[in-house]
Each structure stands twice: as C-alpha cells, then as structure tokens.
Image (cartoon, rainbow, N blue to C red):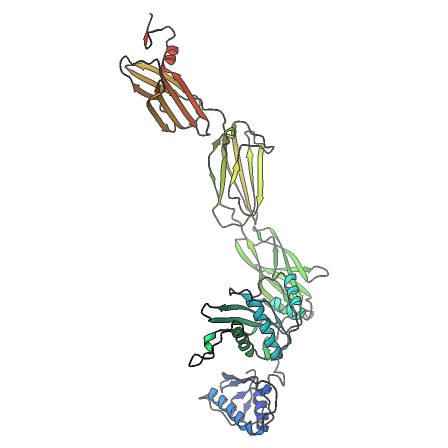
Amino acid sequence: MFGKAENGKGRGSALNMHSERILRTLLRGQASESDIDTSLYVEDSRGKAAGSFKTAGKRPRTLPSGRTPMYFGAMALAISAALLSTPLPPLDFGLQTAYAAVEQPPPEGQAKPLLLKRVVILPFENFSENTRAISFVKKAMKEELRKKGLILIAGDDMVDDFLAKRRMRFTNSVTRFAAREMGMVLDADAVMVGSVDIFSEGANGDVRAGITARLVSTIDGSIIWADNIAYTGRDFAGVLGLGAVESLDKLASLVVKDAVKSIPDRFFIRDSSLSPFEAADVVTTPVRVRSGENVRLSVRMLPIVDEPRNVKALVSGKEIPMENIAGTDYYECSVEAPVGEGAFNVDVVAFDKELKKYSFKSIGEIYVDNTPPKLAMKLSRTVFSPKRKGFVVLTPILKNIKEIDEWQIEILNNEGAVVRSDRGFGKLPKELVWKGEANSQRLLEDGEYTYRFIVKDVAGNQTVMTDKLKIKSAAPDIQVDVELSDNKLHFFFGIPSKDETIDSWKLSILDNGKVLDVFHGEGALPPQIEYPIETGYDLSKVTVLVTATDNAGNPFEFKKSIPSILLKKTPFARLNDKSRIVEDF
C-alpha cells in the first residue's frame, strides 16, 4: 500500500482504490476481465502488507449480471483469507479507504504509478548448448508481449546500433546509466534483459526449457519485475502420463508465456528525487599511477531532463571542479594521486540550475601502485661459443602480481656500450635467446658482456636486473705432461688460465690402438693420474689421448705417444732398443 485513511473507529484496513473501484463495478455488474487483471494490495490495522492478489482476464467484456455475486464473493473471500486474524471492518464505499494506483496521484514524496507500455528487449545470454535458443525465445517473447498489449518500439537494428556505439557486449545485466540512456534514446519505459538457461532435448525424447528474465525501469534503473521459470515436458503429464509435452519449441513457448503473464501493467517509482541527469563511470588516465602523479579524470553526464550547471569530483576528501568539454556531455579535471597504495574511490557531485546537489557515489576509482615488479632471471648458461652454435637462454620470472607495461633487454660490452637490444610491451617474454650477435647480426668477439633487463609496470614502477655473460670460442688451454718412474706412468695436468672452466675430461691409454685403460670425470682435471706398467713392457706403441670440453662447449684434444713425450723431457738421453732409455752421462 502507498497510502492510508482512517475511519470513524480509528485506523482500519485499507484497500487499493483500484480494488475498491472493481468492487463497486462488480456490484453494478459492469466490471470487465481487463479491470480484474491487476493486483490487490491489502494492509492490516498496523499498516503492514497483509497480502496481495492477482486475477487475470483475457479480453475486456461486460460481466453478466447473474455472475456478479460470484465474482464479488470470490474477491471478498480472498481478502478475508489474507487478513485472517486481522479484523476486517465493514466496507463503506462512501469513505475513501485508499487512493488509487492509477486513478489519482499519491501525496508528494510517495510512490508514483507509471504505465508500462514500451519495452526494449536486449539480446538474451545463451547458457544452453542449443544455438537457436536465443532466436526462438526472443521471437516468442515479442509475440507474448504484443499479446499483453505492450508496444515494442525498438527494432533489432536500433538496439544493435545502440549496443555497438556504446560497446556493450554483455547484455545479461544493464547499469542504471545504460537503462536511463536507453529510455531517452529509444523512448522506452523498461528494458528486458535475461538468459536462456535450459533449451535441450534428450535422447529419450525428454525436453527441458528454462529462462531468467528481468525488466529494468528506464526512469531510475530499478528492477520492476523478475522471473525464473523452467519446465520439463513431463511437468504437463496427467495421472496416466498423458499430456506430456514432447516438442521443445512448444515447451519453450509455454515457459515464455507463463513468464510474461506475471509482468505487471504498471509499476511504481518511490524515489521523488531522481536526478535530472545521470553520471557514467569515471575514466582515469592513466589507469594505475604512483602517489603524487597527475591523473586525468573524465565523466560523462547524460542529460535525462536537464543538463548540470556544474560538476565536481571528490577524491580522498578533496573537491576538484570539472570543466565541460565544449559541445559534448563530458567533464574533465586533473587530480594528484593520493598517498598510499590501493584503490581510491572517485565520487561525482553535480548541481542543477537551481543549485540542487546530486551525488554519484563511487562511480570510479584511482588505483595507486608504488611497488616495483619483483623479478628473477634464469640463465641456461653464462658462457657460450657462438662459433659452435652455442647460445644463452634468458627466462624472466615475475614473482608478484603485476600488469607489465613494457620491458627492455640490453647487452653491453666491457666499455658499457650497448651492442644488442630488444624491447616489448605487455606481458613478459617467456624466453629470450642470445646467440652472441650484435644489432648488425655480426658475431661478437670473445670477451665478457653484461645483460641489463628493465621492466616497467603500468604505474611506472621500474625494476632493473643485471648479470655477466661470456663469449668464448677458443679451445681450452690444458698442459699435459708424462713421467716414467718406479714402473709407473705419471700423468700431470695444468691449466694456465684461472678463467678456464672444464666441464668434463677423459684420459685414454692405448697400445697400438687397443685400449689399456680409461680415466674420466666431470669438472676440473685432477692434478695427477698414475698408471702402473709391468717391468720391461714395450712402450714404443703406447699412446696417451686426453680430451676435454670447457663450459662453453669448446673441445680440447691431446694425443701423443709415450716415447715422444719422454724423449722431449730427456734431450741428452738415447733410446736403447725400443723401450729403454739410457743416460749417456
């Protein structure tokens, strides 16, 4: 109920005036079924809603006078059943017990009734697996709305054009701003949105259909009606299983029909202070900033019945005037990003020509981010040989949740000059591969280089990572020496350069190509390896083979016969026979 009246005995039950008019006409036998197609709102003696009832008719016609008592009795019975324990005083049609929802306006500040005549249907979301569900339900919905007497004033082309210009992709819901704008642009009382939840036909012939639909007022963006209906074909079967619906299209039509049946012909607007204009979401540029940086705010003020006189933005308690962009509905200003981190709400206040204030709370936000990206860099290797098709793989890893704006990789030589670089925008690259080339694609010389990886997030926070890389194409420098004493061959290894790193090595002792023994290992060579030999063993055809690979993949090989090594170590000696060395002094 939206108003009350008192009788001579104090506050009594109040009936909707439209209900009273129906009762009067029923008494006179002049009511029509269309008059009865409305809601009865009943309040108890405490002013609380006691119940509501709805009757439905098909086409207007005069009730036969003989049936008037039946209609009157049925309605009186319904009202009495709702009130139950609440005493119902005698109806006195000479007293105005309630005001009509349509016949006369309510007092100022109360709910205002509006007829529902013009509806815009937005494309339904399809949550079923049937691709034709949307088109079928939309067609059925239009037919049922026309039967109900609602005028569909916006064609599909007009609606599609509206959605395309405003880049509205998801139509299962609509904002207050969009609803009010559609009311102004498309001349509609309400916007219908919804979804097809079920639209399927099973292998055994079972059919299922279900929809969810809502009507949103284009005056204040409120939901004036909502329903969710789902049926299966078996829901209509009788006791013997007869009457079940087997056609999916027929079942979907019944779902739509029953949903539309519950749509009211009129709705009520309770808010008497609706703004004469509407504010769209505030756009902030840039989207994320650091504290103290300037942010550009832009808001669109849609004139519903009038344009605002002036507009202001409120951020962290600061009020900033916004300037109108000439010839448009947009207002802009610049504001300093607040101190701290996180999202800061942006409110907008607008004043009409009479300087009446209208507030639009939290319609935008400024996101402040002062934390730089946290990074880690994984390297496949730090030394490689481009001449042997070696390369290094750099894998950047983002260790905190960040929206990356841009990244840059640079390779610098010993003098600090950039010899190779690349950059990208958006997400970090999964991998970066450097094959030792310069920007000119030529291979760089051996030496030490530095990579510098720079990452910026969308707020401008920057992180820089650096590390050393080395190009080495020369074979490792390994010295091999052999001595014979005490029936043992002693192998000695030396590496002059401290920067030389050996990954693996192997020592093979061969006699005329036959392997006598093999020693091998990972990492650096041992300082000495001993190999025993039998007394009088013929060393003339014994050969030593040493192979190794450095950390850049460069190979090393040393192969010589034992006698030749020993002769170089004893230049004043002579070889007696084939295996015996004899001093000559």
